[in-house]
Image (cartoon, rainbow, N blue to C red; front, side, top):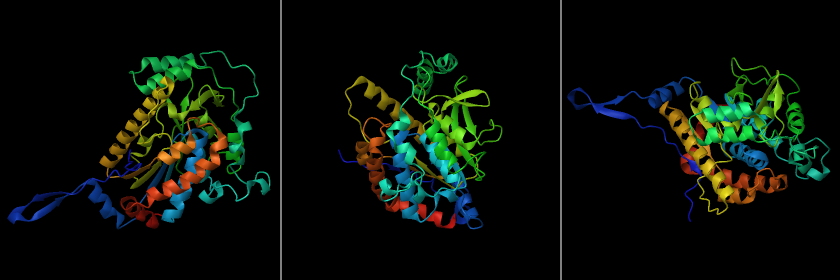
Length: 367
């Protein structure tokens, strides 16, 4: 089946015209027009939103960020807002801490590079995702999270929270994630004024946005580890006496967080949603793809809400080639390099499309 591409263009609303006295055309004021008029007086404000994706979604995101940098000439570190969820939290934090897209790419010959020179080296090793414990925890890792899901209006997200609470607490250590972030930000938060890391309270099920006014204080590394803590896989992360897990339990991208902060352009990289059709016969795979389809619907709704406020939104998702490189196990680091190489090409190709490239031209004045 021919694919129509995986960037949703999300075109901004057009101007509205009406006839005034003597038949003259009067252009009605709209949010988009008002924003364009303001662009004359100030540079555009840009947000980067990075979604969930596991180990291989992270590899895809590295390729996507590098492709954005190469195609547009704009450095994602210059974004006014950075929002990260799960795997995306790692890269939002590293960008906020000053790590360039180029530094995220592996050296030409990793085997000859000094140990630790490449900042992501530890996260591409299979040993980083093995538990030191032989036996799993007992089921019902958080009965409060399970109950919180049951008390919500039934939806894929309430079901996901319920199942996450029923699952045993994970046993894989988050230490490799902590060490990776601390290479760039050893303690405290990042110097970037608007870095937001999304996690879920393991007891209440509530979304927690670290870095936001009123959120619990946390080191950047701890917040990222919490956001990445897939229930049943990683150990929950304790911050100020409370346990936190994956921010993707509410939304894979949490795009709604940038709706009311005065941005002009938002670029969202979503590694787990796609418009590519799936044909799976196994019940489990069908259930997973059904959830991801609903996540894609949620992402479209959130993007539409931003557009309604006059914000230009570009959502980039994996293509069929990307999905083939990833396979069915997003936590398989052996495919990291293959996914990265595919993403460098596929995302660059998407960004070079005329209707997208023209809209990214505004990034030149946003630096």
